[in-house]
Image (cartoon, rainbow, N blue to C red):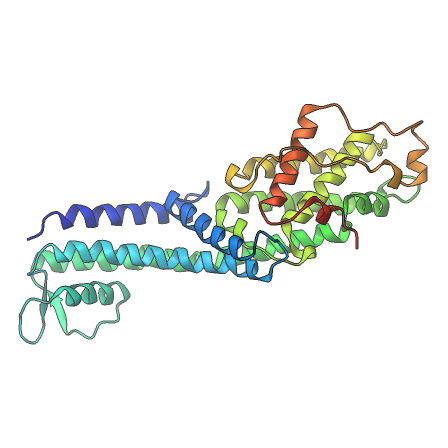
Amino acid sequence: MSYLLVPLGLFILIVALVDIFKTILYINGGGRLSSFTARKIWWVYFKMARGKGKAPILNFAGGTILMGLVAMWIFLIWVGYSLIYLSDPNSVLESSTGENADIIGNIYYVGYTLTSLGNGDLRAGSAFWRIISNIMGMNSMIFISLGISYLLPVLQAVIDKRTLAVYIYQLGNSPKEIINKGFNGKDFSPLYNRLQNLESLLLKHGEHHLAYPILHYFHTNKRSHNIRLNLAILDEALNIQEAYHLDKSANAFTWRVIRGAMDNLAVRLHESYTSLADDPPDFDYFNDLPDELKANFEEDPGIPKDEDFNKRRGKLLGYIKKDGWDWEDVLDDK
């Protein structure tokens, strides 16, 4: 008996099952192995796209990662149990002859027990191994089924994510357009109802991002559907309101509510998904404001001398650059 194969197989099984648990059931971020695998697959796609967010090939990254994680979990469980069975040459027998199965036979037996697709040509070699086979079957029913069922809620979250992106894009396809379209000459009443509905979508997206970290890797090269670009557009519009205090009405609280929802989302975004750019982008929107709003100022007040304000905008730039976009894509209102 090769006893060393037992602890090795158990170690692989524990790693796989803990990773499945943390990724699927523990809604506070993914497992380390899943996160590592997802990052590496994204890195390969990002290199093939030459770091360009408009490259169509990035659209396939999310689906590849999702299927790759499920395949990885199944493979690890298969390998772990195979090593345990290979530790004893009498663990699996030929049903017709009663002879010990070879290495391929052991691996085949584990595979068909996990998938319940066997034809009975192999059997467990003793009562002990029959019990192990039952445990393996229950493992398969619970954890592999969990892995496969993980696909549906993730895909629904992807749909919600793109819905949020389009919702923001319809407010305006650039920060200045959100301000200009939302201002009716007197106040921002055209925006208020839309912003109130936006709060729940942002909060839901933040929780989805925490529950399904893989959501980050579902990219689209269409500007109107890309969540990173549209979140950057929205946040920059909030920065314009914060810097210039354009809305002085009683409903100005609506802007702060959305800012709070964006802050909540920022907390949910792990450092792996964002970074701080060396310098924040230029803040030059005053001349593009409606004349009625510019009339409240004697001159351009400029960018606020607030370290947190500049740091936020620097992180915003880093956030979109990690997805292959530049600040010009945020400002482009075509």
